[in-house]
Length: 489
Image (cartoon, rainbow, N blue to C red; front, side):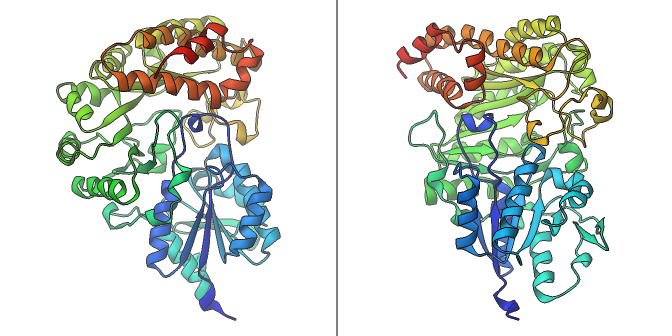
């Protein structure tokens, strides 16, 4: 047997689409970048196939698997993409019966038992938690005939039963990893509302210290928080800009601004280097309030977009969601970002069991007081590993995980149908943005912000889940379409 030839690893993103984030643009799968870099160091030959960003269908995926002929196939999955991830591995098994299959990501980390019980015929291993160290070790054990069950951080079927090995500790130093940026086909990754843009997604830290009841990040990282050296992080941005022409950066961190001292150093280095890039990041209300005196430096450093998840408009709901903030704090933080010339994006979660048309109306009215540039009205998704899951269980009407995407109603409130809920949410979008567009049209003194807002709205209208849903409500009003068409940006 030519074991020494078992080197080729194909990493595939499942071809899932629901018209949410992809309405704005496309970016590489950062987890695959990191894993591919570590696989190369271990002597493997990784191939990254971003079927999602390429909008490939299953026949194209089948053909790609056939022509690549890998020894190992790894797929990643969040809850909404798990069905497609499994389907990719079924296709892989049909094309290459002897291929070794692996599944990683948030959903398998928590739901490995269910996955292996249901799909153990097509999935050999679930990789749990961080995969950079686990993947090379597991593939090496497999290739050399060692017992894979001795590798920490995986789950597998043995004796007909799904079992997990001992947990793997998180990597102590994130800077030892080397993402395989040279494997990226950069032309696949534009931002739709900015000309000549090339997008990368980068990470300066991992972990989250907040315990939001609807989220999985705190659990996934087990309450830990690790951060990279500011110099090395900014050097990576500089490398991507100068080597590959990347000019738009999403910071993937759940919480990049946790340490003000480190965050200020990152801003200083970016200002000093003047790379001419645009940065989009997510942070929390508390840090915006803390940094009120340096928000102008965020903008100088290239920060254009800040996403802050306010999630609710009442203090009681914020408490229920375990958001450690108050309405007035969020209102102030969003205004500070806008006043500093940046675009502020936020979201509100609707569709809890006690939701009513009246409560949604009230949320919409208070959403206007938050006054985010882009506001998303998201539907609560009952992820099976979130703290809220047990309480939501009696109200779950949809068990198809592909609908757990924040834009389709899965929970039926006590006093509404799911169709009514969807209609109310769509009306929130329609009402909110009909008021926003004339404001943007009248905006003076910040041409970049005005252009990005208007073109971003066009991208949402043309590419997002709203496009088809709005047809049922008579479409976007004609005067809105005309306004978008006539605005010169």
